[in-house]
Amino acid sequence: MKPTLTEPPMTIAAVERQLRDLALLQKSLFAEVSRLKSQANRDKSAIISMFPTEITQLIFFFCLPDLTREDLDEDNRVQMKRTAAPLVLGHICRIWREIAWGTPELWHKLTLYMFPRNQALQAWMVANWLDRTAQFPLDITIYSYASKAVKHRMALRDDHAISFFHVLKRESCRWRSLRLRVPADSLFYLNKVLNAAGRRSEPLSPVLEELSIETFSVGLRHFIPLQIWHLAPHLKMVQLGSHAELNEIITNWRNLTSFSVGRLTVKELHEVLSKSIYLVNCRVSRLMPSPDQDNDILVHHHLRRLELLKDASPEGRAFASFLANVSLTRLEELDVTLSHFIDVYVSFIQRSRCPLRRMKVYFAHHVPQSGVVELLRATPSLEVLHICIRPDNAWVMKTIGSKFLRLLSRPGSSYQDVTTRYDEDIEPAGGEEVPLLPRLRDLELDGPVNFDWTVLCNFLESRYYTEPTVNGDVGRTPFCTLRSFRVTIHDTKPIPDTYLDEDVIACLRGLTADGFAVSIEYPDEGDKSMKSPTMVDLIEVSATRCETLRYLESLITD
Image 1: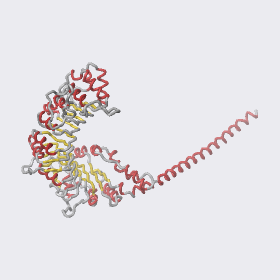
Image 2: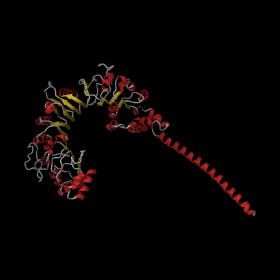
Image 3: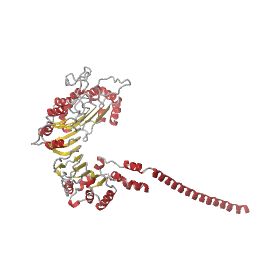
Image 4: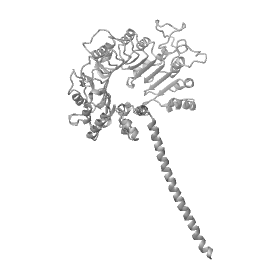
């Protein structure tokens, strides 16, 4: 009986001693883990401290976000918090905080929401932010969301003055760029604030180079003239929204390189070009006629891109009167709405002798196909052509139907229109006729469809580009330059079943296999019985249903 009574307590005591030893071992292991973590943090901090301050500053600088138009369009506060990157960098560790707080280059960009909940707090934060910029030029963005402003009818008025703007105005001598995205009604107040202490002898912001004012309407139906003649005499970029217009053309904007405005008269546009001799980009959303315009030919040698989107006069007379009295010798990109005066457009291009590379054409009126062909023949250097026709102008699409595609086809091929004649001034290569737009690289059509799919495939096969072989011989004519074709179809009429026959499918499959970019889209929404057939609808009417399915799925993916 004695072993039975004495052995269990001894065994239990031995196990308890082991548990105490394990507890001591666990405690020592936890202490070792804490020591290793502390050592790792010290080593990490040592590595960070080993970086030269200049290298760390550059790394921080590349961490700053670049705002896009989409960032300002949507109510996305999480995304907009990226603009506080300098503050975030300062919260990592003491070393980073010292570097971030002492680097003025990180703080020269300031992005502010226009209608904060706590204006006093925002004004205090703006003042502290500006203290860290030293004397660096400031890039300021003030934004508000259209959805909220329209819903709550927000606007910046005298009784709703944001205090942070007054803080910014005290540093106006350091403004380098000012970007506003505000309700249109707010321009009244901004005009008053900006002109409160302005004098012609003392510009409000002498170093301001970029001014962008984008507006959206909150019940406003008229234009607001901006009095910025004293604001910045050395602007390089001016972009005004649809509700803002200039009170006068600045006489000393000789450094201006980019100019975009909602509306302008023909005379004012001539004045801008004559006084801004280094202007490179010019965009006018709405051009209005001038009864007393100058008829002298204006020659400009630096303008590379011109956009004339809408003509406020009947039948496009404002565009015609402007182009009839201007010569742009370096023009490379042209976005314009065609009018009845097609001969004026042709004369403008021939007079300018410009190396036009890209052209986007809007059809607002019916233009004969002969006029379009004459215009394109005057631009043999054209590489990118985008033709855009609104769905409600479906009758205009006849201008760029099957016959138009035949004119673009390679001469000598079985697809080329036998009645086509080419400009005699263009010297043929190797005795062969030169096609319309011999250097065409990208073609995009946007509007109601009015061409036969077979004619389209014939055109693509005759002009598409293939990579050279090892010996440099492509085995094709010099006019096979086309690299991409895109069509966006807005059409309410059904497409005949014969449009997608086996030959068309085989042609498009072969082109995509060679790397040619083809994109066909049907963006129309609404009643399915009224809109154009989708890709699935086209599959249903095809004889080779499965093969067409695989091919069209690849088109959608591309």
